[in-house]
Amino acid sequence: MLTDPGSLPVRLCIIGLMIGIHGFFTAVNTAMSSAGRIIEKYQAAIRLLQILTCAGGAWLSAGDAWLVFVYLVLFTVLGQYFPHKIGLQHDQGITEKMAGFIEALSAVLRPLTAVLMFAANLVLKIFKQKTHVEDEAFSEEDVMSMLKAGKESGALKEEGTKMINSIFAFDDKLAYEIMTPRTDVFLIDIEDSPEEYLDELMKLRYSRIPVCRGDNDNIIGILHIKDYLIKARESSYEDVDIEAILRKAYFVPDTKNIDSLFFELQMSKQQIAVLIDEYGGFSGIVTMEDIIEQVMGDIDDEYDEEEEIIDKIDDNTYLVDGDVDLDDLDEELGIDLKSDNSETIGGFLIDILGEIPDESDIGRIIEFEDYKFKIMSVKERRIERVKIYMLDKKKIC
Image (tube, rainbow, N blue to C red):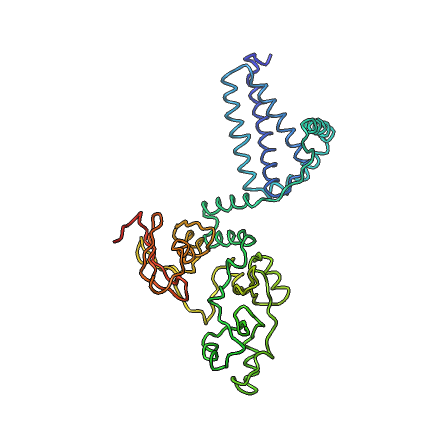
């Protein structure tokens, strides 16, 4: 009898063998899954052997409480956790060495696994479940979870984490969220004399400039400075017929996803898109550089001026540009401001004011939740700079 003390050494040896076999297949299964090489027919054979060894060990240990306890401890450590870790650490090596063996074993056990899988599918049909499910690719949540784990373990650097997060946010962003708004766009009116825009044109050094006729909403084309300089060399800057050298503007709705816009600009070999709002008016512009910066971060060239859009004064006080996105403000300072109408801190404060600001509003203080906002400068009916005080840390007069 198995409960006979004389058979105890034999039982222990068999239990140890069962745990060893189970651990071996646990390591192989984990390794092949981690390496992306696991196949359903192989997995069925592996699981069958794992179940048999687990059940065999449990049956052999039955009848002695202390032996059941020892079996459970050894099975958990040596049959599960330890081989699982080994499989993860040596997935490629184990997969390469064991693939042939597992394939042969699967062929031997195929009649038995086929019967068991038929029975399992029958149960699934009874409960109106699918009998075959295609392997799904990693979801965004899966990748973000792994990304978080990699960041916490130090395997991923902060820059890499931000870039991957930006890639996931890429297809959710709309063009108007990253555009240069019309109020900040340098335009040339074809009806103006060259003296009115030439100095600023040379000073700003933009490579492409929208051109309108009479009204900013009437964009008639894009001026490439290269074309302008070539023509100016033939005569003079003042005598260049700008309209004759204009390139066709690429118009898109300002609600277009930037991932689609990126590929459209790439396919059409355009560098700039003119955004149009729902009423047909000029909304702003988006360049290829603007789109790429959503993933890569700011790209400064030799003509970009260094400026601090979020300037820390002390631990509780910050000076920020009015066009800073609310999302960026939350990411940089932890200031979580929600608005259904505005994307920027300037627009958010205008919503609270309920009126268009002018120079008389400079110095005006707005209180909201745990913050005070002091308007520092106003330009063309927009809040240009604002000082933020965090009241939960420090009170101000």
